[in-house]
Amino acid sequence: MNSPHLVVIGCGFAGLELIKHLNKSPYRITVLDKNNYFNFQPLMYQVASGGLGPDAIAYPLRKIISKMPNVTFRMAEVLEVDLKNNTVKTTVGDIPFDYLCIATGAKTNFFGNKVLETHCMQLKSIPDALDIRSDILQELEKALSETDTGKIKRILNFVIVGGGPTGVETAGALAEIKNHVIPADYKELDPSLMQVYLIEASHRVLSAMSEISSAKAEEYLKELGVNVLTNTSVTAYDPSSGILTLSDGSVVETDTVIWTAGVMGKTLEGIDTHYIAKGNRYKVDAFNRLEGFENVFVIGDLAYMTADEAYPNGHPMVATVAQQQGRALAKNLLRKLKNKPLTPFKYFNKGSMATVGRHKAVVEIGKIKIQGYLAWFGWMFLHLMYIVGFRNRTVVFVNWLWNYFTYQRAIRLIIRPFRQNVS
Image (cartoon, rainbow, N blue to C red; front, side):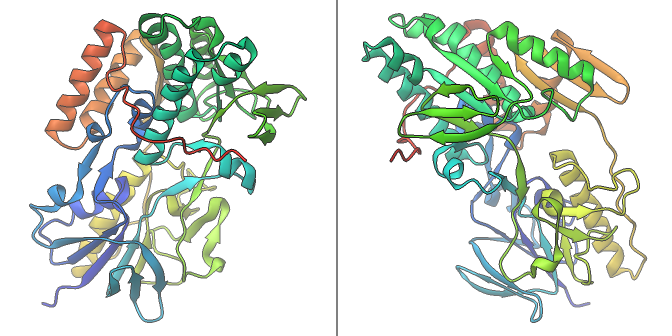
């Protein structure tokens, strides 16, 4: 039997699950990714806040596929997808395919505002996280040399825009730096001069969770000293003056704005915009096939599926959906080889969770809602189990243990320049 060639673009949660479940199958698989590592996105904020090093949440793709005899990897950027000729054009040459799976994930959505896109920081990659970490630490160092109180306040005002899980967790981590790191390591600084703002356009943070969990998360944030501004959006930002203008007319002077207010699909050149739906995602059928194609599949954040009755407006752009779609597609591709009918994808929601800080977390599993200590330990345990690689799990656990007993952030090296371009 001929071995059909499957090309997988992107090896995040969705792509990784797909190739793991097609390991040693008759498919010849070529994985394309611009990075040579898998990145555990849920803990990115801990790299940004100095709690973990980047190597703790990243794992080499070649190490993952070393025991997959039917899988090869090419570190490349995709230039164009030619669906008529079944070819992917990349920076390392053209790659033909029998089947194509697009799993490129999502990117930050700045809603068309080029000023914000240019001058705000984002948290979608390890380089982003390292930029934020260096930015925070450099601002603390800069504040030590400043004598003007007004300028110090501007330097030490940190603004996070977007009250989803990433925004909430980042705000909580920055608040813990203010409460524990500054008093211990920056004794010349008055911790009260550092202010953390979390700005959310809707009426509550964690809007995807219940009102109860949302209210508890906001309570936790305020206990840590975070300024939570709901029903508020950003209307303008002048990086030269540091003035961030809000929808209620108020302003915050800051040099650091971290944008976590939304994501959108990371589409590819060569695929007609006709196939793009809400959220810049590709329209797929119940089997994750790109509409109108039998051999092209889209999984993860980039897939916009309305065929799942429980999610008529598409699935949430979260890791659990991506993982389940990766596994489901692997099973369907194996069914194809046996000429069996494909099984439609149905998402099983295992629940939601978010952590704010030490002993402060919210977890929802069905109708069960857990808060506080138990939720926090549950959050840590679950994330620890999903990290790829025994070494990485060990490193994360040891760092968490050290942080727990010392109240310190282990990784506080300034190794990257500011990303911000002030004009």
